[in-house]
Image 1: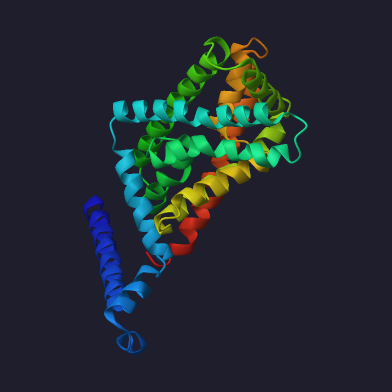
Image 2: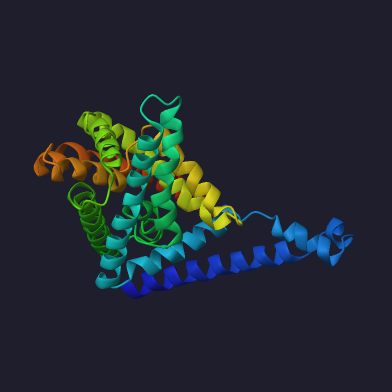
Length: 301
């Protein structure tokens, strides 16, 4: 029975590869209109052609499979670096807020650009950010569910999440007790952190759903982005900050800032703030976007 199942899976994969090759040949074969173009003009047309949904899915699927088989050590250090790097978002928002002052017109819209810095660092550096993995490593499981696959996802999620949290906790400690920030910047970061902590657990969870969806959408669009990756990252992460949505990794840095400053207990931080953000981001990234992304190409594969 198992041999037959493996045979059917192999036949399905071979058929999918054949369809992809057929599509590639069809796309590369010039039409009557394209034959009238010069070589340079055809090259321009090719450069402006969009990737199909199946092509984007295949790229992310391959990335997800590679991530699922990375060593624990590699995942840990990459996740820790991501936690440290994403804290740049909170730092930059604090710097802008302190520089402009609380009475500056449109302060929220302007300071939200500072929130994009950490995401640019993490995503372009290819570091392990938990919310990116709510779609990347889930697509292989949707394509081929298995017990080992679910185990690998749980292993990656747990390692990356803990590493992200440790990274944001370290930077929060340095911000409060390291003496590296001006009093104005530190006060601005504390104000931002208190605003997040003032949300109820249900509000924090609900505001985490759009955030998880936006990050998953960003991951889905990056393979199609041609020299516009930076713009996409800034656009979506600015929207998260400007819309007052919650992101579990960046938000944990704000919550941990209150913990190390003595304003919030560690159990309260996790139960009422970090856990709701985590659930909301998973619902938005995996529950909504990953399912929708897989659904649109399910018939094609």
